[in-house]
Image (cartoon, rainbow, N blue to C red; front, side):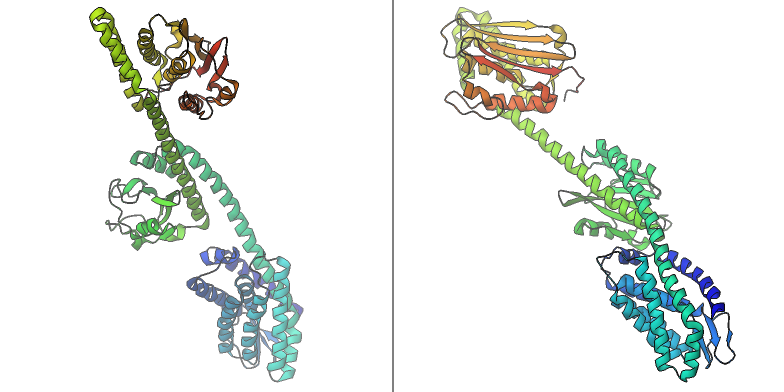
Length: 580
């Protein structure tokens, strides 16, 4: 009995090899992750574990119950011979990992093979192989991780059941009893240890994969961070080209490609001489990804390349989604399908999701930009039509008496409306241009309210180059005219102060009007404030744009009292901005 222990344990080296090989198969990863296998994957799993059982039979030792001698390999079985083997390990692994179907299927294959070899235990061993699959399937837990102790116990238990079946079925009983006494204990121990060893090796390999996957996850985040500046501009040929180049430099694949829903946007790496931007999508798999929104692994024949010697042997194609809508694809090309590892699949899935989020951010920023333009148009629409008519009336009245002054007012009115119309095409303007716009407006109002309104300017010329959102000052000074000094008969004054504070520029507009009630002042600039004099929408839009474009420190600061009038001020940081 004891001389069988060492050879049986030596045979467990084969378990190490098989365990490593099996981790290369995608169906096995599905088993480990407790995911449902499709029919094709189930058949593959049954065939593989069945083959594993057959290998365990062939690598066993024959034992002749007449001569009491062991053979080296079980290549043939005589009438008086049986096999001390590790067949049950593959069957137990199949049942524990895949459940009844996989376990029984593998047991049938390995059992039929053992029965075909003959020997007085052939039928009993064939039956016990199927029973081992049933037994292991009973202990299969889909929602719980498999423990080494469980594999050890089930491996040993399955072998004990086999010994019992041999005693019940095999004849003559005396020969069966002698066999069980000789090989029973070594096989129970060896196959229990082998089952646990099989699971341990698989676990270690998968743990290494998980560590590698974690590194790839970090890489995906790094790549997403590196490409965000480009993809925030949207999915264009330029942004796709730069993104593909960044990914290609970091990931060990043959080529990287991006498409929209109709054409190739970029291709970096091998085969870039004939996979070129601007060409229509030719791969059926790519169109399938766009239609279904699911990742696909395309084989060489699925790529549909027009060049017979194309080095691209396979591709992983992932959808790029924006708000759950597929807007394009990201492709990783490799030389063969064997290079498509689980880690690579997880990398492209994670990266495509991150890039999709960047495209959503780009869309959101574009929507924000459109909203800002809409706010500018709202401000433009707020220019009271009476202002135009009143201005023209003033100019008409001055045409005969003061033609030169009438000419100056016409020029000021022209500048005012030109600035108004141009505001929708700009994101930024200089404070100098914004001041000229306000001066044109106030010149007209000062002429209209002759002997009633006086405007004073205190300006630091060094501050006039700072960038500011267009149509920021005009709504503020208009608010002074319409609400601050409207009810005063004389001595109305508006002061515009622009001060250079070093890193910031402070802009202040003061009037000596009747002031604002505390109730209205509490929400002015933050919300609409309906009243018989207006809505407060102009100041609210100005306040929001200042906060969005310059930061929270640039929000409007409003002070008001009945005896001192109203003061509205805000800060603008000195920083380089590009005028749109």
